[in-house]
Image (cartoon, rainbow, N blue to C red; front, side, top):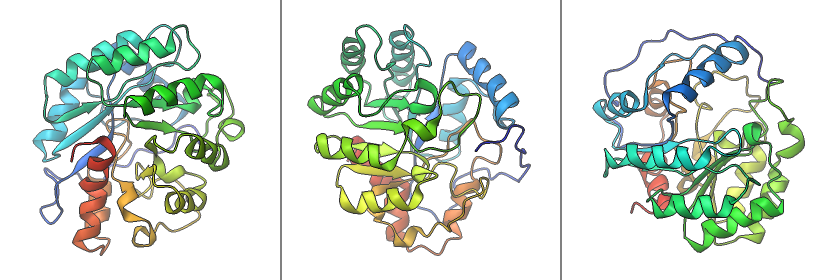
Length: 294
């Protein structure tokens, strides 16, 4: 379980993507309008960790792109009904400022009025898929409300990124992630919607072994590495990416909501000893296929 007031790590940061690494897509970057961002920062300060990079959306994009990140997948999530359409318009507007470098994901609050219509309109705005967060939105991933959203994404050939791993858990959430999240529940979705691309962030933390088995079994599942390579969370099992189905693993950071240097996990990958071909998959090719960029 996530304990409040986890430490900030004042590790040195690099000025650019390490030169020995291939081109990088960061598949997990958060943006929000400033008022919502400020509330999120306050929540993290009280219940999680101090965020090192308290930047606004344009600053986030400029920070990462100027340091050599080639493409950014921008994420938001609606924490309550009635705000998703405005968030989607905000996302679409920000992405238009960087038409070749940013892929923005839509949001919707599962079960809200006209959820399907909100999602269809977001796709009409040019957004590249759907982002959901079970810990914040407290949805049952096997419900009719969710099946509606899966169906719309599949029919529009849009992927879904959804945080349905059980960790990091916090008592500040309005629901217990251990009751609504599990690899078993996600497997039902994979079976029922075989044409739907799904990415589970954080390697499925804390069911990492179970999610590793799922990507070996299902061609429509991806995992991202977000915050799991940083040595920040107490993880029982050692992460050995060379033993994963590497074309289903993609790099992400959770930037800017992190308590350590922006390139901490890039440095880990650079020192991992993974062959260049596998690094190419993790750092770009997997996300490119997931998002239809290549």
